[in-house]
Length: 390
Figure 1 (tube, rainbow, N blue to C red):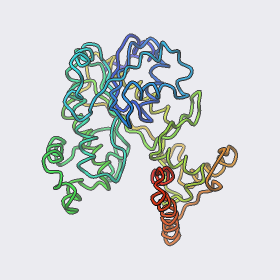
Figure 2 (figure 1 turned 30 degrees about the vertical axis):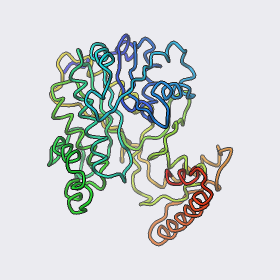
Figure 3 (figure 1 turned 135 degrees about the vertical axis):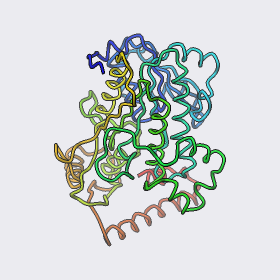
């Protein structure tokens, strides 16, 4: 395989890029990274759906008003083009003229959209995370020239595998397309019978991690021999080496939600072993890898036989960080750099056993105390929504 180096600025210059999930945490950071590293980039198409009465143009305009884009000129921002689409529809349901334009001009595809919630139904998760991946692959294969296809997976995609997890795709018992058909034609079979659902997810603890493994298998089946890459980040938190260190956008999931909840005094506990390794990675490291992987794949004279997989996480032997380390850092930094407002004084502890049960019960009572007045007074569920997100 050719290993010649290529500057990101040169690789993305004059290129058109297609991004799904562009309004999310990773997606926003990716758009900013592409525009900053390669201002000569021609265009970034972002597949967006209407949400809360906002049209795609309005959503992207709101996105570009975020502080991480302040250093970019209006001419550079204008390169971000919103397109209305449905990720589960064939060709994303794009208008024929837009579809023809994308097929002719786009050479790099980033598929970062998906459902991140761990408690959603298996059917919903498969449709949003696996069917959407199939639709994105089909569109990518129809491009006049595909230089790189990058899928954002998760380090948790193979939690059903015991021992060392290598940078390769682990095959599932059931094919991704079989699971898509079941989700479309027999949704009740997947979720209403616990025994069937438990057998379906093949040793995974939730539908999210299973859907990520299925999506990786889909890429293995459909894009082997193409310039395809899979990025597996660990828990992603804010920027590290960036002009706005610590930026996490509006994200309330995973590590970001935990940090925000802590500094506001809303999160008071973490459950687990204090000595366990905490696998996490800064957002800018993830974005750098996604851009570098696209440049690497796009400059290969001979495409790799299998998708290239990249792990992005800290190591348990080199620069390890434990759960107790995280707690200590959060407590120390939140006192050094406090928020303007907070619910309680920010202080977090690791709780297990009976203390965990008691604390969970207290949190539930507090949630009810917030929910009942909001419901009775017909107030907007702002506080309850905040508690639910945390």
